[in-house]
Image (cartoon, rainbow, N blue to C red):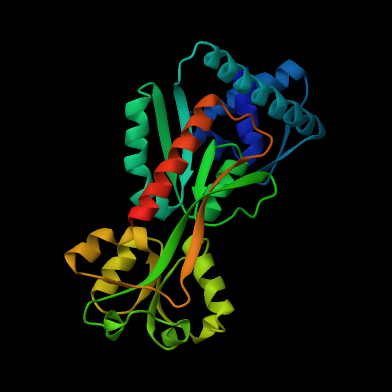
Length: 302
């Protein structure tokens, strides 16, 4: 219900880019420019300074941005609260999830939630934990499900369930016959790593340091941003990797990969993140409760 010009202004101001705002709003760039021009004419004030291809907020723009944050937040809360009075559980649900959760846990869970609440329209953004928490902090997403605690003070983190990280290797690898692998045994071993910003990478690096294994001592042969790619490389025997046990259930059954526990075991917590100051709707609360219960069950099954 909020003024469309204010919504467009808020998006441009948040990204400081007409191009990025147009992409997020599914508008053409001239249409975005027209909306901003109309708002500037309404206030009889310039809201953006344009110089050398970059834009910045003017003092008037900063003031409008402050009010826009509050107005748009109140507008969203009003619509959600009025909708809840009708008893209907529906509307958009903007979720973000890190790769492990998005590929191996969330799809089935979303299907089950949709079956219970047909009027809910879920949209899922997939990325590493760092990217997802950034989108949640920008209010571009209602909720994030990530593999590491948030580093951003504007977000609230809620623990969801535990997940075990294990070493994976080809069945022919010498580690496949072991009951467990100690971190020092990885020194010099060809190793396939996740990309920087990954929750799995962050936890693994921290674990190795705590076990007195210097990251420079690892023989990293590849850094990949895809779990499927990592599993494919490890299946060839090129190296070993550390991944969530939940991601290799199919390969373990087929016998194409072996999952070996680390000693000491490497456990982490999957977490929900959402803005501290943003109103949490009945729909979002219901999904968080549903997801927490399902993820604990799936983790125990793994």
